[in-house]
Image (cartoon, rainbow, N blue to C red):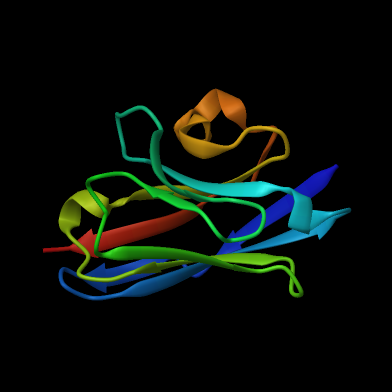
Length: 126
């Protein structure tokens, strides 16, 4: 079992930055690939970014490439999402997720993940 808790959400003006964190508890965090997804009001949850268990591979949605950066610290059981140049359309609940077996772009699929956090709200004002 892996428990995930997101933090760092909040209200920011367009063009600003936020850093989300996802703290994991449970066993063998370093063996899990991690992902970030988001769900805007009235929309389906969508893939944002994923990182392999080692941190050596990352996968970004086109909409955030060049502005968002995912990283992980396996010693701290934490994955981060640095979000820069935020746009109002980034307003959503952001969810952290964990997956042990899949690799590559399979990590962009919501159904690939076994564990999910409760989400953290990000609001970008124009």
